[in-house]
Image (cartoon, rainbow, N blue to C red; front, side, top):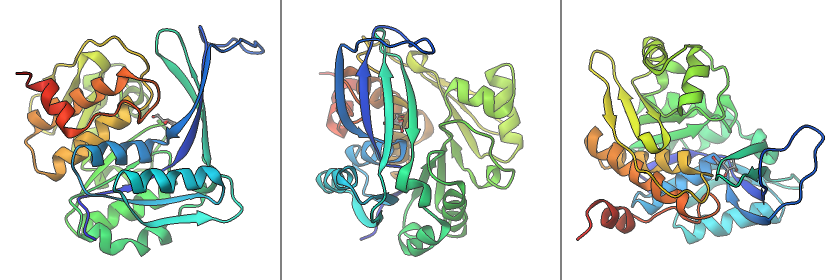
Length: 302
Ligand code: RIB
């Protein structure tokens, strides 16, 4: 089956505890709530794209355990192509330990498990799917070799590439010119460019070869930087946040879906902003991720 968006994806089960405030080193706090929910930056973005109407295919490596099966069931339910999802028999699935604080902010520790075994060969096996897609996306939760292989294949076939550089980490020079669209948040952007402010940081990454950079700014919206043009700021939405888990992934996946249908930048960014804002209205990454109809109704109320 031809897909619009291919995601080189991480898949985690999120174990989420709700506590009053960030833990001190060595401290124990009683949690007010606990949830076990779907997560992983790649899977989250893939589901966001699918809910915005894109046909989505995954390239992923998951555990042979119950958590791995949970991913397969979820993607089947979301209509996502799983033919390039491989299972590591006897291996533990990716798991994220998440603490959510009373103000909705969070801290996350990710153990990638079987996902750490995703290789360039797995990506190569999906070359036909990549060649027929419109957008290939990845995050920094998957091995870099897999992302490089996918982006090289995409470039060879004229397919747009989108990188969510989260969690932020030093990236090799060879990757930057292969990235058509980069979607860091403010902290990730400043760290990646080692710069004191957004404007300087964005220009530094564009000089390294990134095609377009979209920095996400929470309720302040987002800003698009492209070589030789003035930045475009798209306002965001002030929300009563329940939690922000997966909001960045929702933005990335929704943007991928918009780019796949060749929407112009202002519309694509307005749409991704709205989807990300709506995703903060319930616990967990995918629980509140909106449908295409929900975003449409929210942006254009009767
Ligand atoms: O971006 C949120 C995600 O980060 C969570 O779902 C967790 O699994 C980690 O990957």
